Image (cartoon, rainbow, N blue to C red; front, side):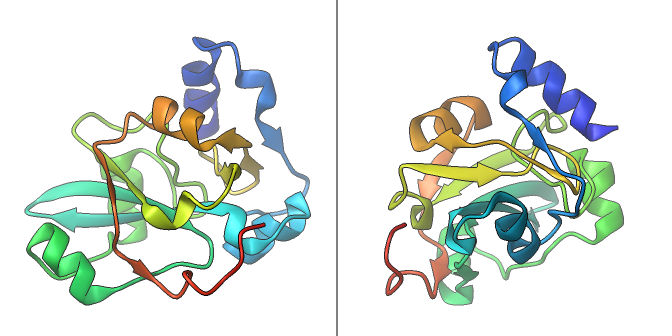
Length: 161
């Protein structure tokens, strides 16, 4: 189970006890926000794409949507999301629990600028009923991200919570 991989990953940093598991689903931004009693924008959703035959992850604020022209400018190709089967096979996490932690080798992680307006955010932890609260510095550290990018729209008018 992917959440066990994420727990083992966080154990090396001594923070596995910060993972929260819920008796309800947190598989979507709305469900996660309800489970955590926070603004949907603070959910750090992890989106999986294929770029030049390689899987990538983009972690973005819950209120951000992929802006296709920005995505194409960043990656030189159209945004093509992974199928649920591809995500589980290539990334190592099932849809609803995809996160930037304990991913398969070769998966590049990018953090979208939409996250920077928050002090803390809530990414999933490998299952459809889990999350962890991390500062932006912690998200950078634990995700092993390649770089910050700006490929989302729809969030700039929202207030930071």
